[in-house]
Each structure stands twice: as C-alpha cells, then as structure tokens.
Amino acid sequence: MILSSPSPPPAVVEPTNWRAVYQGIESMRRDGIASNAPVDTMGCERLSVSEVDSPNFRFQTLVGLMLSAQTKDAVTAAAMKNLNARWSDGLTVHHIVHDIDEAELDKLISQVGFHQRKANYIKRTAAILERDYGGDIPNTLQGLMSLPGVGPKMSYLALQVAWRQTLGIGVDTHVHRITNRLGWVHTTTPEKTRMALEQWLPKEYWGKINILLVGFGQKVCLPVGPKCSVCRVNSACPEGRRVLRVSLASSTNITLCRLDVRAIAYPVACLTGEYLALVGCICCTAFSFLFFFSQYVKSPDKFFPLPDTNVTLGDEHPDDVKVKVKVEEKEMSEGESEMSSAAAAAAVAVKEEGKEADPQFMKQETHVKQEPMQADEETSGHREVLSAPSISSALSSTDAAVTSPSVSMASVTRSSKQFLTPSPPPVSASAHMHASESSPHPS
Image 1 (cartoon, one colour):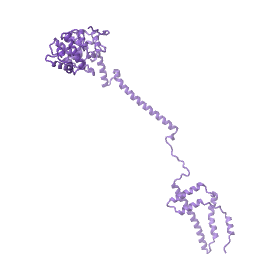
Image 2 (cartoon, rainbow, N blue to C red; image 1 turned 180 degrees about the horizontal axis):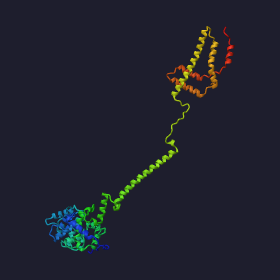
Image 3 (cartoon, helix red, strand yellow; image 1 turned 45 degrees about the vertical axis):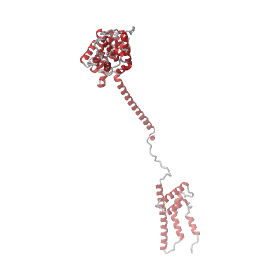
Image 4 (tube, rainbow, N blue to C red; image 1 turned 90 degrees about the vertical axis):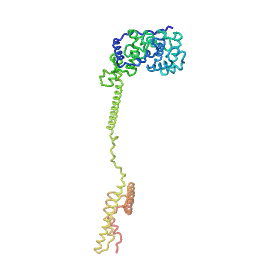
C-alpha cells in the first residue's frame, strides 16, 4: 500500500536566534526548572519491560505510543503496567490475539482517553502483525502508518525508539505549540509543523527535539498559564515578551507607549463610559435648572404664591358678629337709661316746686330729647323699607345673640324689633305744638 504524502509547505526561512534559544532550553532541561519532567521517566521508551531490541520490546513500545494519544504520560504508564502485569512474560502479540478479548482489554486500559477505540485498534494491529510481520512491527514508515490507529508522529517515534532510525521529527501537541510560540514556524497542524521544521532544522537535532520540547512544555511552557517570568529564553520569545508586558502593566504603572493595546483597551473603555455618564448627568442637571429658572423669571407667583389679602364683604367671623351685637345692645341700653334719667329729673323738679306733673309737658320734654335723634335720621335717610342685606344682618345678629350665653332674651327681642319695625315719619316741632293746643286742657 502506497501512501501519498501531503504537499510540502512553502519554504521556511531559518530563524536567526534559534540556536541560542535551543541551548537555553537545553540548560533548563538539564539542570533548571524544566528538569525531571514526566516524559523523562514515563516516555514510550521507558514503558517496556522486555529486553531491548526484541520483538516484544518493539511491540510494547508501539502499544505505548498508541495509548499516549490524547493522554498524559502518567496515565499511559499506569495502563501499560496493567497490560504487562496481566501475563508473566509481559505484553506480547500472541497474548493480545489469543489470550484476551476486546472487552477485557478495554477494562485494563479504561483510564486512558478513547479507551474503547484504542482497544479495538490494538486487537486489529496485533492480528496484522502476527499474520503479515511474524509477530514483529514494520521497520518502514509506510508499514507503520498502515496499521490501525498509527499516525505520522507514532511512526517516526516508533522507528526512532524501536528500530534506531531517525527518518523524521515526531511532532506532538507540545512541539507544535512551543515552536509556534517561539516563532520558529507559523502553522496550524502538527503535521505541517513537522514539514516546516524539517526544511531548516539540521538533521542531527531531529531525534532530540521531541523529548527536549515535550519536557519543556510539561514544566515551563504550559498550554495555559505559561511560566514566562522564570523562563530563561523569554526575551527571545515573542509570546514571552507579550505576556511579560501584560503582567507588568497589571501590577505597576508604566508609560502608555509600553502597554499592549489589548491590555489597556478594557480599562480605558470602562473609564470612558463612567466619564460620559457623569458628564451626561451634569448636563441634564444644568438644563433642568436653567429651564425652571426661566419659568420662575416669567411668573414667580406660580412657584411662590402670595397670600390673599382681599377681604370679601359678608364673610365675617362669628366672633366678630357676637361683638357687634353686644356693642349695639350696649348703645341701646345707654340711650334708654339717658331718656329715663331725663324724665325722672323733670318729674323731680316739678314735685319740688309743688306742682303737679303736666303730661303734656312731659311729652314735650321727651319729644325734645328725641328730636335730635330724628334729625340725624333725616340727614342719613330714614329706612321706610328694609333692604334684604339689612334683614339678613339682623337675623344673623339675632342668631348670634341667642347662642351667646351673656345676652338676655329681652335684649335679643329689642334688637330684632329695632331692625324689623319701620321708623315713623319725622314730626316737626310746629306740628307737635299744634297738636298740643288742639287737645283739651285739663281743668
């Protein structure tokens, strides 16, 4: 079976500083922070329990590579330990084909990723190896890649470890990620990364670069949260410089020209939004103040109304009515007392002279006393017919007087008669005298 290889990528220029970076990573893997990585003790070449360069060793190496896909080295090592412990002589092609079924095999490797699919691949591969290769694995790239579940990376590494042949670079996720971060290649898949690296990387580095970068990726250049601050080659790594700039910008105040745009975009956007909101509130407040001030200037009474000082006629307080009634009653009583005093004084004077009181004289004296009052009424206009307001005022005065405990019932009656009885027409003094002469004189 002839497999068509993918078309080679465009020519890649050799990075200028790759040797210095390579040496820096070697120093970290040897005696630095990247030493003692999981791959150093649990790599595919460390998983076999059989003698090196034997068919069983090569088969165990191939099975370890098949189990390592999408699985951490510690989990792969635990699964291989279960398989080797299943038989006294370890894992072999014969045992997989004849001594175990697929369900039990799946149970032994259940901790790895995609274990059901990998159990099927291992059973089918063992059957092919027993039938076509005498229980051994192929020693060619095409033969290895024709096996179920075996890709380019596994084939190159199997040739390198099992057959001591370095025909290409084994590129896994670690190698693909780190070489792109360093700027050595600019690719999207591990296979394209392998082809790009093989264009400029010298062949003596092909067999060592995989385990070198895998350990470095497990300890320092992690997929998430790389430890760029402790990396010895961060100054030569574009990704390391970017991460350090962002970290420095978040912890210290530095000049804006040194900040990455993505590091300051969000804070600037937040501050801008807050300032715009503040300016909007100030503008709305100022506009509202100016609007209400202009309305106040036009009509201040609308905002601060003045008290009504006009007094409506007739809207008198009940207490004022009571006071008026008392004053009127007092004036009437004083007038009556004066008239009574005058009549009594006249009677006393006549008696003192020994004369009998003349009724006509008494009437004349009384009339003389009343005449000035009638003259005042003539000047002011006597009330022949009472108006409606006068009657209403009289009635209200009477009601108020009745409700007042200090006013007698007689006073109320006199007050009512004063307003309800029309005044007699005025009588002149000459007419009064004429009436006196015509009346018979007592003998």
